[in-house]
Length: 269
Image (cartoon, rainbow, N blue to C red):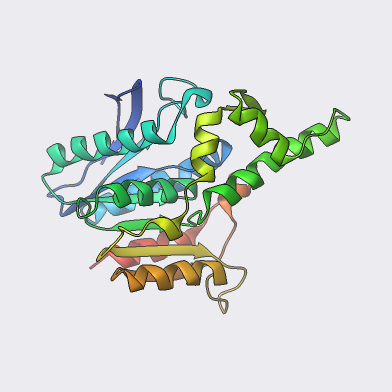
């Protein structure tokens, strides 16, 4: 079906959405994207997957949270709480459209966002689909801030450490990182968010797809530890390793057919 673009009225501003409807839907997904340039790098692949899921009967709503993509606002004004509210609004809209249980689909930081939403609203969502989930917001932020470290170094500008950047952000400064303005509120929230603390994720089916260098390798040890904890919380976690280009890291568009095929296979039943 032809996807339908529209704006959903959010708590902080209009949220751009792209809706992939399904005939006689049996389920529906709200998609939460990764941060900054990772979002743009993955758009085409995500749209391909949404079409395939819609063909299987799962309507998909792809959203740009406030301050990102085509949505209103600036990233510097975005907060984790606004993004959580955006996800809940999108899920409510999708419920009205499909009258089916709503699931959440997250890529990279978007996966961590879905976890935080479900952690605050347990039993509200049907299942989770995670692509290459970020396990720890603090570690992710450190890696992201290192892009600014490299930028300053390559241009012979005064150097900064990630700790110094955190101090500036905590004091209310806005920092440009890889072409995006990052605000302190979002940075501080990332420092306090990780999957291991999402203890309210209980009795929930999860499909976890993670990139590996070759087909004989399992998902990363850090991921296996989180998966074990989630299983202790009575979640049914299905970890699936895939190979191919890590599209969220690439500056040039590429295809990841195995990721699409494995995801589609998981829901084609």
